Image (cartoon, rainbow, N blue to C red):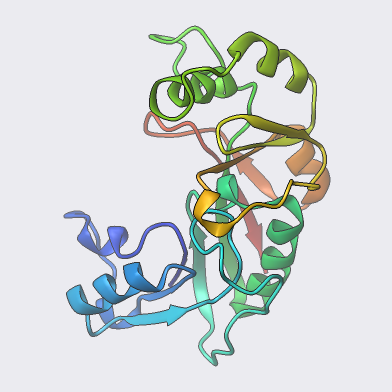
Length: 218
């Protein structure tokens, strides 16, 4: 299987994991994290992908193609990758990942629907309100939660950058120095993902998570 970003060996560390270490591949933009994975599981395959990512690799190369590998996979998993990836990059990466699947292989990746209520039993707001409240506590105490939420209402997709700048259905993000790249949260509605990937199966969040899962079959 191929773990595309976001986890760096978490699947292998899971006590319930049945993955053969020798058959585990990881491609990621964070070279330091890959070094830790390589040290912990030297039998696995760790591949650096020097592609630009707003937070995780702000000095990477924009739109560079995936590293060339001959291996093909039954499963490719990208957990919590596209919630931090601009829409154009997501579409490019999906197009590049699908050819790495074996016949009838599956690509599964997660995304966050801003208007889904992930925890109605203890939290009354939707996913976007939850993220805004976390940002107020952890990143930007001056964020106007109500105003920001109202600006994004009914949008198909949007980005919240550096805990303050909202971009609704546009990727015209104001440039800043890599050291100032603090966060980039992407939100896509389920209906928009169905529009982008009409052949996909989209599953609701599981195991008390906030992310939907989009599954494409080769």
